[in-house]
Image (cartoon, rainbow, N blue to C red; front, side, top):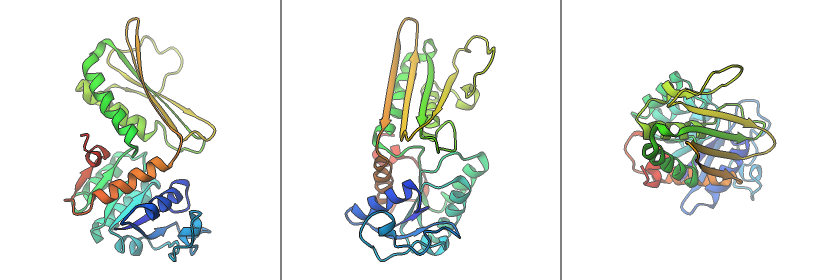
Length: 266
């Protein structure tokens, strides 16, 4: 399977090149970076710390996408929307690990998914997706007698907050309670906030150092507390999950899918 990497110069981009190169039956068919990037023209194997693969990083996203069976994309929302439109034109599956989308971007991705298979996830690790499934079940079982708080920590360079994974966990909790997250989400607390409103789902964001990704879902009740935690120590787990998703899209009907579909734990 021919898989291309969008945004090859970043930490995830290099991990993705390595993961695709190591996956049986897969090859890195191309890789992109923005016009003017110093890695344009560099061999993608050397970029990822591998032996040369004979393929250079390109700034021509349309050509790279058209030559691939699937693209993997952990870039930024504006670029991801553009890639989704190009992928829809060429019939190329799109694996999206980018986070921080607004509604217009979400709508554009959904429109592209009418023509191609898109797997979009705030986190592509098996462990996190299992955590989301467990969170939904626990939220349903405990009900409003337990307050839900989601705490996440990432490296100092992360640009969006809360993380896509934290929001995914919040959606899982909201689904378990049969409520809309947008109506019950609390992102900021500062000053005299008054008592906590029953049924809210709170988010706390921490940033610092080189933390890959820590997420904890807290269910706090009267006299007891349940904490569900996932800690990522290696970005390779996200890259391997993305490759698994790309392979899964082969022959798949157009649609907007999640990692739970890929893993069979919907």
